[in-house]
Length: 318
Length: 173
Image (tube, rainbow over all chains, first blue to last red; front, side):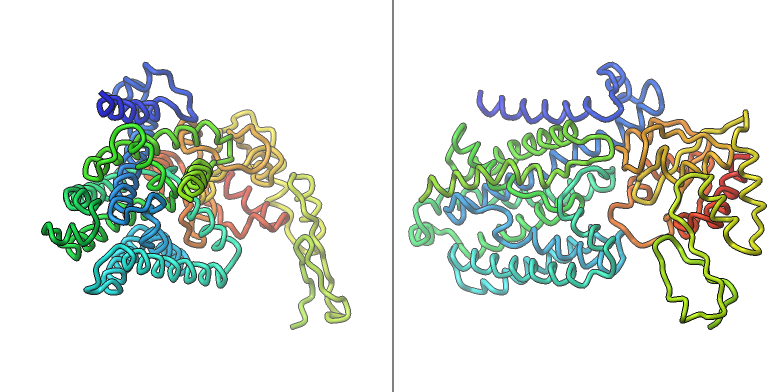
């Protein structure tokens, strides 16, 4: 029943996104526009603006939720999130470099390439060493490097507009979602979540400890690599199309853990659903709070929600 | 370089002693048409024709609605020099909210302007370039008559703005 309610809540949050927007269309108008009927302007608003935005929220949220659950399962650390492997920072770095050199159309590609580079770096740093600590250290190192280079690019930004571009982009937004972004992020995130779900059984065994898991036949090296690629696909594709959206991957798995299950294997798909619903809901709130001409950035909102939860978890753990 | 006349924009300064034989004209920062005309008349030898023609069509009966969109998807309402230029060109600014702001893409799509006025579309690359990157808005722009004003004309607050108004006038006609 709880799983059914979770999926239902996710669908409702996504549907609500379709019915809420600046143009104040009625439920009937939105319903007709979804079917391609009624005023062509309404059809454009619903099919070309609201639908891609709602779908992208669901896709990115699902990727972040699943990534967070898998990383928390692997590291057995409740404070782990998608950012811990440095892929958000690497994706942001790729995008910032593209912006720095005035190649705005190439932002998504640059973010993806940079994330892939980050994944290769983390895998290279981990090498043949196994264990969560090595992975976390490598991820934190790569993330710190990416953050430093991003700061450097901002430091040497050619003009104030370029700097503000970078700053705004880093705040995360679904405002310019379109069908291309949905297709790209959807395909990559689906592949990423599939890989993460594939590690679920091994993550369950890992709750017994690394040594025990190894004796039970878990190939830690393979799990690490699959995990890195899965998280890179989910996080990289999300940041590539919407900028940095933080903390969703951190607190969503906890919500699922508290309400449904603590099983790391089941936690991954369920956190994907919860992440999808959470980000759709957050975007709905962002729409409500955005005034005429003043956009509330989604990444800012999720951070404002996520930081108190993060602090609560940290205090509770200590 | 010793020009006969040096035109300085608002808040720009140069020491007179550096250009002893040059007449220095300082333009005021203005956001209405009366101010633009004053600036135009300040410049010796400049043909005030385009600005005066624009003034004559200010109250034309057959006004076409105009929506201004910058590269970032921003627009301009009353109290801006864009609004002044639209009025001087005989158009009616579709935006009634005063000042500069970036409306939601849905609001833009819901408008039905006769002419879309664009600017800065050839300027620096920008990730927030909603006017270019948002597929629905890009399509919306192509579906309307479009007049593109070179961004360099706007900040002039004088002859440049008169030229912008003349370009808008051509589009509106």
